[in-house]
Image (cartoon, rainbow, N blue to C red; front, side, top):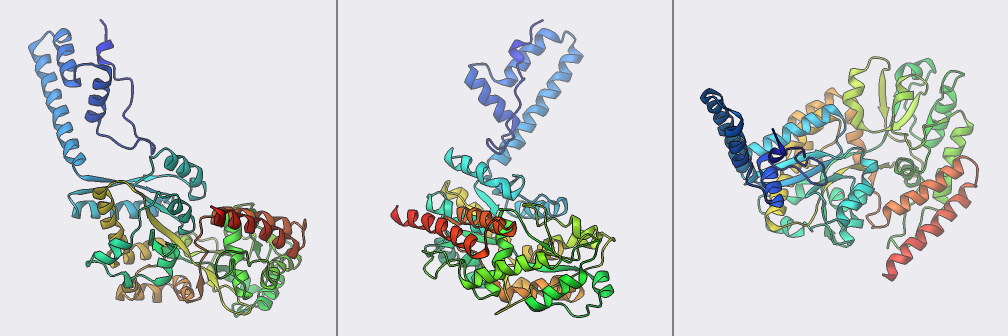
Length: 473
């Protein structure tokens, strides 16, 4: 017996590159491509040649009716406006919470289907997204750090949001913090809407602080350096200095640059400014911490908490997003205090935004409905209370339930209070290249290949070339 006419060897596409399609649609498409009769007709013909008893044949007819029912259901779903949504929510807890909120949205919007797909680690997304954009197969909606959107806005791949913001009377733009809109703006146009916010603080081991006789959190660089020295023993380091050339190293170092009174770029964003006296002071401070007993983090992985939770380090820079995990572990009694200051207090505002890629009017408007939902108190309060992120909505921040949550969770209250001292990375297309260049020289300086001034001057020279090339386009 030959089964060639029932060739089902290829699976329906499920990857990010091709997206989901109902099985009946996929098979129908293959039938047409091969010039074969439709799937149901071929199964029916095959059945008549194989099943000789009326009972068996009747059973197969029941199967066929189920296939038709499945195709009917899939067709109904396929009639909804489908929005492909890529995100990098790798945490199992956060991913489940997000999917539950998406399910709530889909149920409330019978004409829209948000199809969430995990793209993996956020710091590895760049090449994958570049390939998708070049191949004209990007997602409809993307969750990623706002620092990286200007590159795609300049390339013409992103859809501006300004008309939605001005024309949609059901949405109040002023309810979202201004600095978050600034993070999503390029050349006076908004391209990214806030999804969640966070910032950087200093985790500390409460037991180790008590044993070292430290009763007050270090508020200045000098106090912090003294704490590092007092907490360092033969068995542990007082602090871990971020190392590696990745964005994490650059993102954390920028806090100290701002604390010293410096800036990343000039006011017109046409020249590097990080090689100023403030920049040198910030890098020299990191180097002094190493001499005073601090260690280095794992290369390009300073965000990991392994050494801290294992008791190998007393303090480390990190954010609020780990709070659900920290609550469950029992090894360390974890506290947090604001980043220490010098000329001023400063932390780096982080979080993710939603990028809307150009597609068609129907899909873009459907995606905008979801973007509005994400910024609403209905989403933000529950998201913040369950994930360790901070709200992007003023109404969510002032919500009675959220305020009660902050009072009951001083760890999160510290990060929420720091938002007033937040600074943001520059929104320029060259930021990914700027970060990679600066990270390379920060790492070299920490390993004493260059002095702080020489390392920053070399980085500034390369960054200025990047900025000059952009101006010549």
